[in-house]
Length: 274
Length: 128
Image 1 (tube, each protein chain N blue to C red):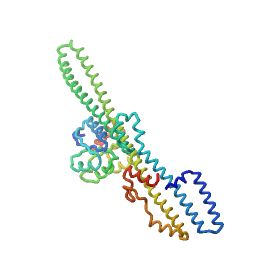
Image 2 (cartoon, helix red, strand yellow):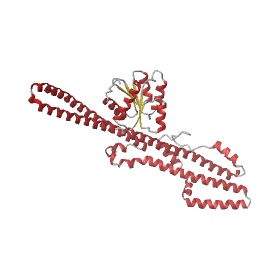
Image 3 (spheres, rainbow over the protein chains, first blue to last red):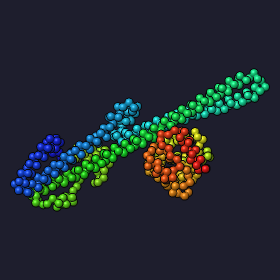
Image 4 (cartoon, chains in turn brown, blue):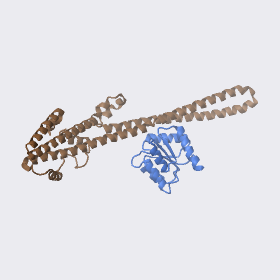
């Protein structure tokens, strides 16, 4: 697989393409058809390898970004408190799940406080009811004692003021409660991103597996040609190779299945030279 | 509207269930049970006694829209009024829920006032 390095440089790739193309024209001019076909085969293989290399590099980059997400996040201020916990999580999707967990826990803490505060408000409301009873008694008394009129009016005014404040307090507390619904909405968005990240990596790893199979076909075809089977026509070649095609055998990985862990992804990429 | 009616709140986020429960309590409804998705809500509904269903749309296992359709297709449950409280705000989705027989639709984020208005409207219509 080390010969992929040859194709790493775009200029080198173009230079080789030009050389081979010129040789192909030369061979055709000389009427050397079998050798010309061999050249076409090699050109094709070259293209496969260049593409394969690109896909491999991209997959490795995505995989490393997912695993390396750790270092980027743990330095942010938001998560400083939980740094130790964050450090023990090794992968981007798990980290995002932890964000959901963290916001959920804190939203519940806030709601706990709101619940407590509302209970205190209820206690005060009970006192207000008792005070209203006092005011009613005062109202009955003032019929016989007109000098209590101003005291009665004062008591009524305070009672109204406190009811207003209590109503506003309850409104604010409900506002704090409702503000916690951000947790549901951000959680849903994060869940979708988690799915997206997992899907991208899964698809790329799948693409790598296909690309490596195509690549081994190309290599096999080249060997057959060298072995003197150059006269075999392309379709027969393809048919035979389709049957014998085998993907790379990687530890912990079932054929056709998607790599089950980040370590499996690492193993697969490493075995393919990325 | 009977304030003692039994209400089932279905949402996969415990925060949201708690918020809805608190708001309902504030409106005078105290007989509230919870479920975290359609699949866990169905047995509760089938056990009987639920008078009003408040459900999210996007949930694992069984979504709110599937729960809505299942309830409407079951003769023993089809009479239960259903209010959907969801972040799904696309026109097509609202139409789909309406066609499936939803009684009210609230888009998150929402306010206590909106919740009260929608509940009042649902029971006004049912009585009228």
